[in-house]
Length: 340
Image 1 (cartoon, one colour):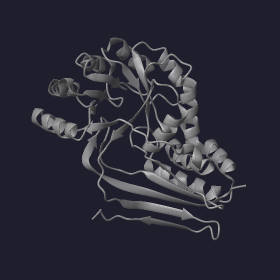
Image 2 (cartoon, rainbow, N blue to C red):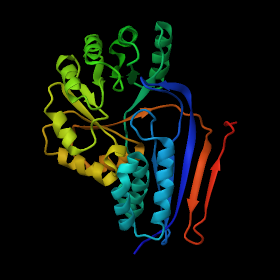
Image 3 (cartoon, one colour):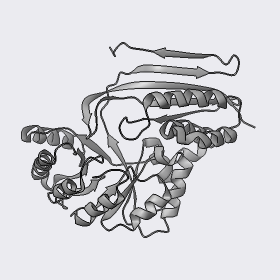
Image 4 (cartoon, rainbow, N blue to C red):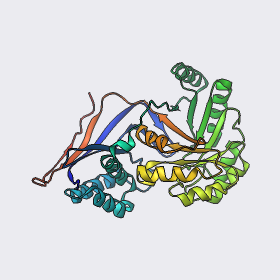
């Protein structure tokens, strides 16, 4: 029986070329966890996840502590036993647990998650410009790079958001499309007000206007919006998807690996959807997850889409942790100097 021989954890700091502004936080860098699992028969696999502070109650320090604690307990265990342990403790730090579970999925069945043909996945681009001149320049630059869909973040000031979105639509015209994301920041009143300025010929969808738990409020916006709503943070189980399917005006659900826990769980939901009447369904995933989902889904109305954020080529290891069965020692480093 294959057993876990060692686990290495790294918490990276990936500086962004441009700040990524959300309604609740502006990111100057991303700090993903990268997990490496090695087995006693020489198999090696990686997992990664990123905790976004403010997106949920999960914290980066909490996730790091979870990864260290669980990793120590998994050494010497079979892949199956380790996976069961992680699922039993996943509620403590769902995103961090997913990084480990993802690695176990791949080390257990490596051939299952490798695509047997070339894969083309549309990539949409983040968008940061705010003034008309900046908007014109950024649109032209990114369209020259081949982008045709742009993610517009809103949620801080509905009047300013409305003016900015209108300007983007006017300048973009028929050359491409946008998706507008409020990251849960609006009241129902403000969300409906903004939605009235979304052009259905340019704007594909309006994402998560109101609070995660405000199903009624999001539903009210969906009924009044001229473009379909997409739910994000509330979509954590198949029950959530089924509930969204009954809501007038909700055309998309965003399914994320970190909320469903494993590649297998994500593929299971994909297969179940093949028997449904969904015409629009969005899977938002990493390249790794996109490969897995596309390989296991025959549903043409499941769209796999990735977002592009430009990161600097240089990065630093913010902290690292390794554990091996020979001496059960661990090493932790914190690099406080900035990238060169």
